[in-house]
Amino acid sequence: MFRSVAALAASLLGATSALAAPTYIHAGKLIAVPGQPARGASTIVVDEGKIVSVLDGHVPAPEGSPVIDLKSRTVLPGLIDSHVHLASDRAGNEGLAAAMTDGLPLNSYETYWNGMKTLRAGFTTVRNLGDEHGKVLALKEASRRGWLLAPRIVDAGESISTTGGHMDGRVGLADDVGEALVHTDNLCDGADDCRRAVRRQVGRGADVIKFATTGGVNSGTGLATRMAEDEARALVETAHAYGRKVAVHAHGAEGIKLAVKVGADSIEHGTVMDDEILKLMKEHRTFYVPTLSTVNGYLERLAANPNAYPPAIKAQIDWRIGITGKSLQKAYPAGIRIAYGTDAGVSKHGRNADEFELLVKFGMPPAEAIKAATINAAELLGVDKETGTIEPGKAADIVAVDGDPLADVKVLKAMKFVMARGQVVVAP
Image 1 (cartoon, rainbow, N blue to C red):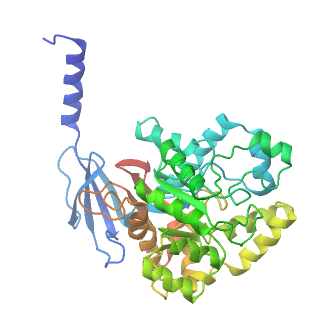
Image 2 (image 1 turned 135 degrees about the horizontal axis):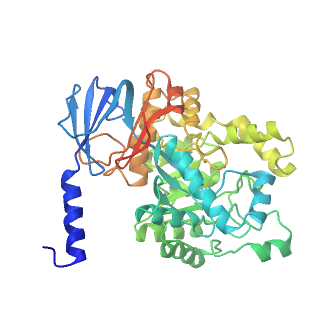
Image 3 (image 1 turned 90 degrees about the vertical axis):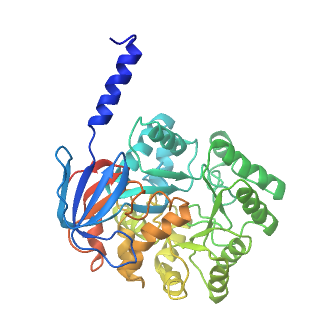
């Protein structure tokens, strides 16, 4: 006889656990370790959210074990997007209006909705590089507690820049409106203030620090470097002292050089690169996250509404569309490490796989583009012990598509199966 309700519950939970059986996944073709030769017919055994073993052939499952039939499909690790903004799927004038009217509670639901669109698209891990009010930090914690489903999230909290820089939300607003609506604790001026700004984000729970050495396209602040070297160095040194990697938004060449010299872990966008930059990035082993997909977002919004952006920003968008891909054409042959990132939020969430087509268009072989979205991105995000390959001990982040992505990366736009940490998100 059970002496308490607690004892009875513990017994029932133990019985349920004992009855749980591993899941057997039968793959037709398996890209277990991107960059290495694909395997033929294979069986992946998953138990308690982890990959237990990867076996040759279609091994029969023991009685009671579920079987997922992907024999006609190519199976590969869950994909990783190293640059997203989950809190919004709108930009330009539409995004500004939404910020004024939707409010924080509704925007928090939008953040979750964007996360689910991303997850269903096969991206089981993301690095969120900036949002206000901690919405993504909250989504990450809610997912950790098991309250809801979301991609694995590496989050930057709120992005940092100097006053008047790309992350100063008051830029473009009337003074009284900006001062009333926009908080500024993510801004820093001078080295000591920049150390404070990093500590503020670390204190909020940020996993990575993002800051901008240059202005930006969407803010209308241009390509010029807007940060002094002592400020950038203080940001990087403080972040690294707290064990956080650093992602730097940089478009213009001088801003990229500054970021690399002071020790940034990745350059985001990197729109204007020269030989000196490539040499520096090679020496420092700096990752490059091209975010080519931004052009898709711009073109789609402008097709729907030619006045989607204010004139000053539209001029910069036109420039960005024209130059996109040119840095990748230099960086990949130079041996720069490429990590996959889309800037989703500027482009559309759930369309993250569009970046593959652009990476290949501008010079990356399909196998290398897939490696950028798995092994390389996992290393950059610091989650390579958890995900990025299909190997025993890793999380069961597994996706499947029809066709062969090594021959045609466009098939990655149509996921036929998605499993995140052992949980089926898209059933075959």
